[in-house]
Structure formats: structure tokens, C-alpha cells
Image 1 (cartoon, rainbow, N blue to C red):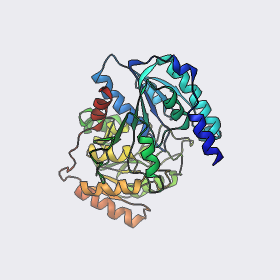
Image 2: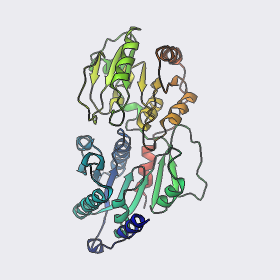
Image 3: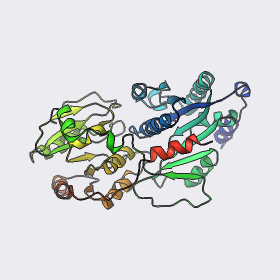
Image 4: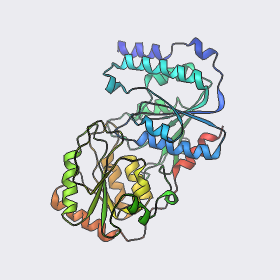
Length: 371
């Protein structure tokens, strides 16, 4: 009770620096959080790419807690970084004070007119900035499929504090916002469009794979909140026993030391979706990026949802894919169960795609560009 009162007071404390703030309307600050994988960061990069195409003179800057910060620099953007609280072993109070102080410095340097936050819920430090820096336009890119434990009432309170809320769609929109809703739903967001993928021959050559035969891609996440190495190796062995070439995608944000793998190739690249045409199917975790990219870009897949995420309901997301053709969902894969799913996916892989939505990154960029 006392903590909540103190928190409420701290969020509303005035800032003398904010009084003299003069935003630049052509400067955009993207703020993706550090998640279990690269979902928040990748969505922000996808939207930033489309926004830059629409507004070539715009200045785009990132401030992120994601440990994938080098990927932002590689994409050509200025990027400021704050170490996630979990890695600092800092209390929420100490960390949010650090976050707010850093954010003030970033605002002073770049003076953005629009701030785009992609995260589960806004940090306390961000909430304080929103109270103090009223001349900034605040946008929340709010992914759906929260677990039942996340308070929808609290989410509604946060939604009301933003000038614009964009909801990147899931494959199936289970609940449509009513007409009066402040939430703007867009199609699922992917970093690459179909036309940007390598051809099958070029992708296989780039990965040093045989041009013939069945080839699989496996990526079960960064493994930062749950160990995936043992399961990945087991699955690699099961596929290789069927004569399948296997490429393991090692996450560029994995905090675990690289382990030896029996996969035919191991790649640490970004985005790995550029190679999708090389593969006949994939075995993937069921994070937002993995699911939306596989279905939107036409890669058959077996999804193994991570049930240890804080708020993301990967089980529901992976089950949605069953509507769209050669996809399967296995929560606890056993060998026989896996082989049955593998046979179903391979048999159905040539069927015509039934997914026809566009890339929501363009829709999101359009909304952000409008003032």
C-alpha cells in the first residue's frame, strides 16, 4: 500500500528539464524492451524500416533494454542501451531511477517528437517521463495474446495514457476491438517481405547445403529463460535419423556459451528468415516473430511453445497456425509424437497457402507518420 502511494507520487514528480523541452517533429524514438527473444526489437526494426521509406528525412533513434543492441547498430540506427534490471540485479526502484535519468539524457540529445514503446507494460521510468514531457506524442506497440494472469483492467489504464496504441495482429484475431476502442489493430508484423527472401538455390548455396534432399531449420529461442540445448539436440538427432539435413539457428542474444551441436550447419545471423526458402520445414518456438514469419512467408513448421514466458501465451499462438495448413503444435514432444507431426507437415507442405494478410509494419508506420 505504502509502496504504491510512493510510486504514484514519484511518477508525478515535476521535471525542470521538461519545462524547456522543445521536440523535433521529424525525430522518432523507438523503445523496445528486452523480452525472452527478439520479438519487441524486431517489430520495432520492421516498423522503423517502413517509416524511414515513407519519411526519408526523418531521424530514427533507439533506446532499448534489449541485449540485441548490436542488431540495431547493424541496421544503421543510433542506439542507446540500458542494461535490463535482471542482469544488473537491481531493485525496481533503483533501476527505474536509472532508466528515467538515462531517458532524460537521450531526450535532451535528440529531442524526439514521437516516442514508440514496444513492451508488455510501460516501465515506471517511462510513465514518469510521460507525465513530465507532455509535448511528446506517445505510441504503444502492444502485442496481443497476454496470459490470463495479466490484468486486463490494468492494461486498459495504460492504454488510456498513450496518444496512439497499435496492436500487431496475431494470425487469428480472437477478439475484435469495438469501434470506440483506442487500439488500432494492424496485420501481423514481419521484418522481411516475401520479395526480400533469398531464392532456394541461393539460400542453400549460402548455407553450404546440398541442393537436393529435405532440409529443416530448428530454432527454439535464446534459452535465456529456459534451457533449450538438450531438447534441440534431441530433435536434431530425430530428424537426422530420417536422412534430413538440419540447420540450427543459434540466437544472437543467447547468454549461454555456445554448445557443440550435431546439426549439419549452425548459423548465428539476423534475420534468419532471409534463408527460409532453403528449408522444407522448421521446428520453432512459438514466439510472435517465429510464428508470424513462418506462416506469412510460407514455411511449414512444427511449433514447440515456451510455457515459461512471463506474459506471452505461446500455446494459443501456436494452435492458431493449424488453420493455415502444414503446421503442428507440440507442447511436450515425444519421439513418436514428433515423427507423426513431421509426417503430417511434410505431406501437406505443397498445399496452396491459405494465409493472405499483408505486412502490418507498413500499416503501423502509416499510423505513426500521421499527426
